[in-house]
Image 1 (cartoon, helix red, strand yellow):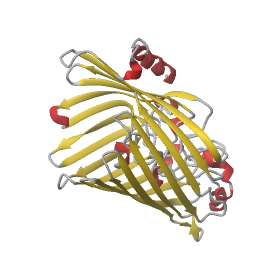
Image 2 (image 1 turned 45 degrees about the vertical axis):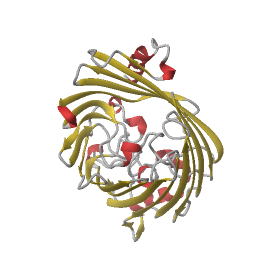
Image 3 (image 1 turned 90 degrees about the vertical axis):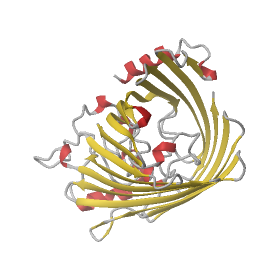
Length: 393
């Protein structure tokens, strides 16, 4: 199914010779109009070993190029389609040598004018939280995501522990990072149905998707689990003034996506184990200053362990020194409930700073440095330095 969608998207893009310049086919009054854009990201990393967060590899310096193609087609006044294709080294930095995939593909129907109600069917970013609205490289002041969206924990989705001791034993296995989950995996491009819109000073969104917020990118396509364990999420936001936006998010679904038939107890099913998440976000923008903050709480049902919780937050600020030059700072922490008298994972904190410069509407450069601290028997590396050049074509 994934291959067919990629071929379909390419059939729309390949005939356009001038795609690299960003093109629009059809006029504003035409029944069918297509917009095609391309974004190139050139990233360089210098990270500790093992790398922190969702950066993979062995540490040291590495180069991570990425090409994104966005194809949007308007089919009349109310219906549109969108496809995002990526060619890179994996959804998360340095995860693979090469990869090509469709990260988003969906149909969108505007039910009411003025954005009051829009329906989306397909693979798209979650409505939960506020960071997703600025997660693309051009809008994100940093190279990576905030701590709640990428700090891996010892929560596994393909194996279930037989005892609390086995569960806590995962702390001693840093080489199993590929098996571990964060609280929320980036923008969570899961597949399903979404509805969102505005009503006065209120924003709202609700979705029914095929995988949970913490699910890995390999499980986001509908063909991976065929809707056996859906997740329901939503967000309500209120804008008391033009400067402030306050939101509340809720999500409940399943995080076990593999087939641990050898580890589940007799009579247990994958659908018996849930992830419940509550989030609160607030943002402020005035003049040259922008501020964002989010707080999340998640509870996981774990076999032979019970319900375990984790909470995480971050505070982020961006300030424009000039129309082209900006600086940013971010601080985040994550905490864990106790299992057998001790936190089930190591409390973590991260401090990050970044500086960026926009040479034009098409060229931007960012540099970032961050330090992560973990109270773990075997901790991830603390250092992440990154340089990102973004070219919008």
